Image (cartoon, rainbow, N blue to C red; front, side, top):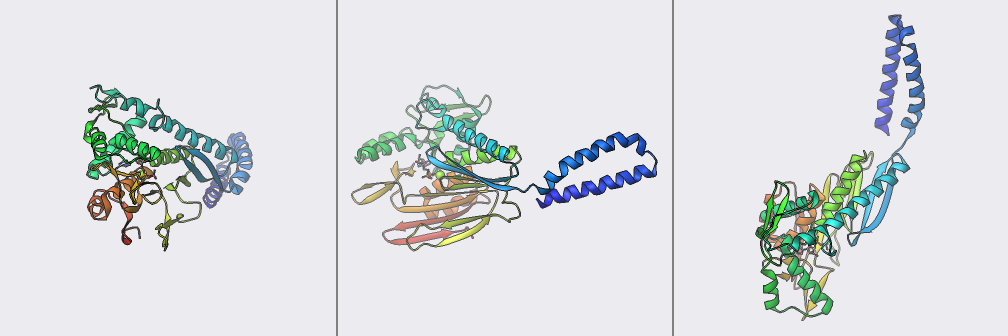
Length: 358
Ligand code: ADP
Ligand code: MG
C-alpha cells in the first residue's frame, strides 16, 4: 500500500534523526539496549508492512432468502476469512430477529402481542429497524409502512392458491394496517402495537439494514474498502485501494436497455420493481409491493433505483417511491437530503422516466 510505505519511510527518517541527536548528546550508551530492541522490531516489522498488498476478497452466502455477496480489500487471508464469517454471522443473527417467515422470530413474537395493550421490550436491532421504518413512513406520507404485514400475507396466500382476494377480504386485512398504530417508547426500548391482528413486515427494509450491519462488522475489523451485495441491493463503504469509487452499473430493465455507470462510495443503492414478482389476474399484474392506502399490489410496472447515504434508507425508499409513483415522489424526495432516484413507470405501453441520478 502506498500509504503504508510512506508512513514507514517516515519512521526510518525519524529513527535516523533520533540516533544522530542522541549520539550528539553522547547518551547513546544509555539508550543502547532500547535502540537494539527497536532495530530488531523494525527489521521484523518493516518488510511485511512494506510489501503487504491489499488483496480483493469475495465471499457469497444465501441469507434472508437472497444471495449475499461480500467484496472487500485487506492484507491477510486469515483476517479475510474471519471477517466474512463474522459478517455473515451478523446477518444470520438479524434474520432470527427480523424474519417474518420464522414463527419464533422476535418480530413475529412482537406482532403476536398486538392489541394486548402491552408495551413489549425489544432488542436493539428490532427497536432500530422499527423506529427507522416509522420515520420513513412519516416522511413518505405512509407510502412505506411495515405494518403492511396482514395485507402482504393475504397476497402471498392468493399467489399460492392462485385465487384473487375479494375487495371485502382486502378491506378486512387493511383494518390492522397503519404505522400510527405502532407506538415507540425509547425508555427501555419498548413497542406497543395498538390494533389486534397487526403484523410487522420489514421485507422492504431488512436487506438494506443487514447489508449496513455487515459493513459495520468489517469496519470494526479495520476493513474499510467494502461492497455488500444483498441480492442486487448494494451498500458501499470506501472505494477499492487507489480507485476513486466502486464502478456500479445501473440498468433501466427495459427491453431497449439503457445503462448508466457510476463511480460511487459510502452510499446504498437499491432497486425495487414490479417487473419480476407479481400475481396476474384477468390480464392485470399485481406487484408484491403493496399500496398501504388500497391494500392492493401495484398495478402498473414500476422500477425504482435509489441512491441514499446508507443501504437501509436506499432499500426503504426504493419501495416507497415505487408506491408513490413519479409525481408524489418528486414531493417526497424533498424530505430526504442526499437521496437520488431513477423512477420508471410503464403503463399501457407508454414509459415515463424521472431520473436525478446523474
Ligand atoms: P425486493 O425485496 O423485491 O427487493 P422491496 O425492497 O421493494 O423488494 O421489498 C418488497 C417487500 O416489502 C415485500 O415483499 C413486502 O414484504 C414489503 N412491502 C410491500 N409493500 C410495502 C410497503 N408499502 N411498505 C413497506 N414494505 C412493503
Ligand atoms: Mg425495499
